[in-house]
Structures are given as C-alpha cells and as structure tokens.
Length: 348
Image (tube, rainbow, N blue to C red):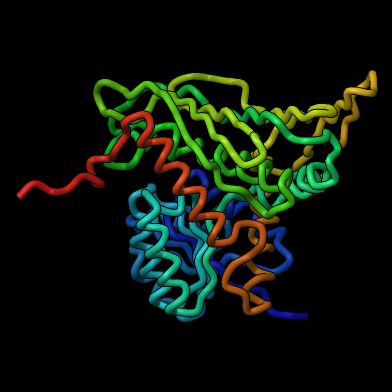
C-alpha cells in the first residue's frame, strides 16, 4: 500500500475548513500540518481536523520538509505571493480561485511551477466532480444538438462591511473575483465541450455592473461572452444580491439545466443532478450523480494522483485553462470599470 501524500494547509478560513473536512476520505492524501498567522488559531484548527503540526506563521509551514503539497486559501491578493514562496520551497500547490489578481500574476505562478518542477492547480473543485464529466460527455455527444446559448449565475447577498474580504478593495473583493470565476469557468468549459475541445476562450467580452460607492468593488455584475460557432453566454455574479445559482444550456435540439452546477456541498456526500430536455420528447430526463464524498475530497485525489504520476498539471484544470479564465475575468472587470488599487500604477 502506497504511503499517503502529506498535506499542509496555509490559512484557516471557512474554505480551508471545508477542504480539511473532506481530506480524511481521500484515497491519496492526509493532513499533516496547518499554518495561521496566529498560533492559537492553527492549534484550534489542528485539534479539530487532526493536523499534528500547527504553525503560527506561514514560513514555518513552508520549512517543514515532510509536507509535500500545500493548499493555499488566503485572501486573493496573497495567492500569488505564498504560492510562489511554496513552490520555491519545493512544495506542490493547490491554490484557491482566483489563482491570482490578474493574468500577469497567474503567469508568474506558472513560471514558478515550471522552474521548480512542481505541481500547480487552481482549485475549481467542481471540475473534479463526476457531474461535470457527465455534462461534458452529453455536450460532446450533441445530446441537445448545437449549443447556442449558455446562462450561468453564481451570486449571493452579504451584508455590507467595508472591512470584510468580500467588500474590501484591498482584498480584491466583489462578485467577479469571489464567485464570478465559476461562471466564466463553466461557460468556457461548456463552449469548449460543444466545440469538441477541453475548453474554449471567448472571442468577445462585454459587461455591466454596479460598483459600490464606498469601496469600488462590484456589488453585482453581468457579462456577455461570445465564442466561436456563434455560441453566446450570459454570466452573472454578485455579493450584494441573491440570484438563482443555476446553469442553463440551450441548444438546437433541447436544453440542459444544472440545479447545482458547482457541486458546493461542504459536508457528506454530494448528489449531482442534470436535467436533460430534448425538443422531440415530452418529458425531461433527470440524471442523478450520487457521490459519497464532497468535491473537496475528489479535488484532493485529483491532485494526489497527478503528483504520484509525476505530473505538473491536470486535465481537470490545466494551466492554459486557468490563464484563459483569469484573462476573461480581467476583461470582464475592465468592461465594468473595476481596477483594484493594488493594480494601479504608483504615484511618484
């Protein structure tokens, strides 16, 4: 029996808790260490999730020679810094979305992976779920004919707090960077599958949104993507408005609805559902995908298997896909006039 890969978790927020909760069910990995900027937080996290080594600084985690791969879930502006530091320390990296603030940061991170010969993946966990694989299969088999229109939404209403990560400009808050990346990702995946590819990049991007008057981040935003073969997508996100978080795909011979497109369940098993309605049939078909673990467990095993195989990237979310996604988010932000203060040229 092969030894399990030793994970370290850098940061102890809610998404780190979801990942740590799913890790014990992994076939390939186990949690060894956790780091926080505060020793007591690391200790509490370690006690809850079984990490035997708890560090009060991120640098201590990177210095642990037994840690093989690090899951990074800091606030967005710190993703590039700590991912690069981890890779320079010889660690494999799974970094939460968005991979960085923009395309330039993503490129720098991939270059660090190449130089250090380590694995790097952006953590779009839904890409590792069999619901996503089944969706791709249906689209590639032209189950609804030619795909024409995609509608993807991921939005929620959070009470305004200018200091919170969600609303804070210095922490790259707003909808597009928080959950809007899911809508760009799944639209590019769907368009790609329809065109017989792994993913597709849009040939044109437009958008409109509401920037909060105090912090300047997007409270809500809508984008329009046009792909080859006249496939168009409307993508919608927000941190200041509840919307129906579903994906709809309309084709020449039918439509597909994903009621839970991003497989977000953080505890226990994940039941996916694809509703397929063909124009020639009266009743819609429900395709259920019942998995006994969360998407975070599946994601950990995608990473673990890749590392065991000596790979630096995976088909589930490869580097070209990541670069295309962050470029799309950059252009969407540009369309609504959102540039973070950290991205603006410094005044001399």
